[in-house]
Image (cartoon, helix red, strand yellow):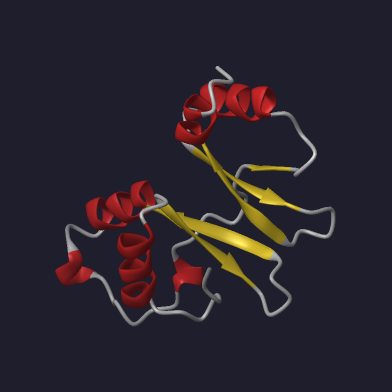
Length: 116
């Protein structure tokens, strides 16, 4: 997780290190503000024709998706899988009622558990 003022450079390094496919952008209370995914990185590079035209010191908040797909912790894995299939995503952020990040669930986790 990163704060909105984290640089694109740092967020991209974390994205690569964590291998979740996304970084969650949170405020000081750990409330979800947005996400930045590998797909978003590809979109930024495509729109700006590569990293040479991107300010890597710009805050991640300039590039993040502000309305990411989420799911509540009490929801069933089958519902998470249905959302993932319907929206063609591999990861959902799990958030509490007050928008605090609880974790993430990936399609691979569901498949590995034999729920599908």
